[in-house]
Image (cartoon, rainbow, N blue to C red; front, top):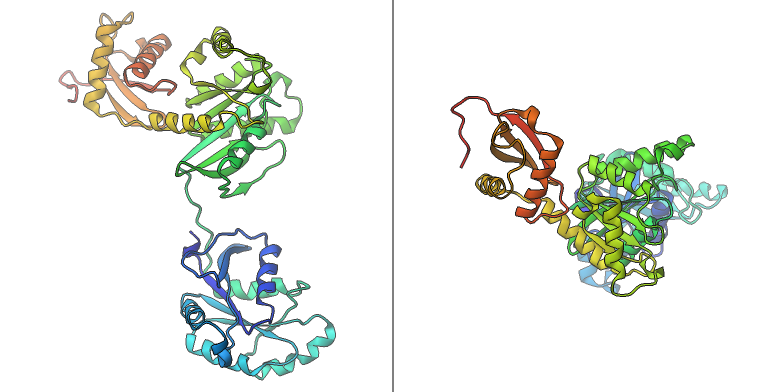
Length: 444
């Protein structure tokens, strides 16, 4: 990640403005910040993105070579060793004149054999530029006058830096799993996202869209890097009147398709609405594992029967919901947020199941012995199956007549496989294929 990027160090005497320049460069480019590993606390670094280039910018201690006894010898040595790792160096000098220490630093840099960009700081006024000839005497032809405090000429300085370093974009860490939060408008999706982010305070990145766009965040939970998307509230298509809302719906559906797990947030006060059923239909079309999270549970008057009664009402309105984990939460009060994330992880792990071919076919035999569906055996024959993918499990079933493998039979095998393989709530994608050749045999 950050360590793979070219490193650019700012060096100079004490109090020439290195830290001011460091901070100014970060703020001016809205830097991606990432601690550089293996450094002492005396070298501060972060990743800066300027145009199409990214690099690690390092702020080093003042290296007053002639009076190094005043500094820790280990710090000086560490900094000198660090310079050998750098792709380029920014040597910061100070208006109005070079100091003897600067000449020692220049000699050090010449031996280093790295590109050097010389900048003269505290050139705060036009009159200060009259002192520039003094600095050309140190032997460099290209010197950039800057004011770190007033942010003058910083873009020019960055141009000089990016011209001499390899051009590399920052490498992103691949998330372990992607979660989409979907639901009706005002069901509490953004509040739930904030509850997730507030749980471990391990924010990795923040990629905001508009208020009607999807918002992606990353955080760690139980050692896994999780990318979570808070989608725009999904309305019924007949109620989408503004063009921007069509784009919002499209992005929300895109987030569902790009996710590994979907959290469908249902308002406890509203219950499962027609819009919620439409949302569930979209999730199932995308064949994604889903958790129904009943939000705003804190405002419901309840006793020990309330939750089961709510589940029964959901199952009555939408029978397919019986396949999904259902959990009550309060995003506002962070009630059972930890439990919800544990369920996400558990569902993802079950969705990632690899089924050995022999086990899969023994399971099919068990299913056909226990529950023989109509048409299977007399006209439709199922020979064997093999797994072709995960997240969710994807199977190919070899049959004699694929046209007889109806939706009802597909549903039958999916339900029975979920039961036998202990993967409730995980869709099973089944593709049927005609077995060719009379001598084809079932794999062991």
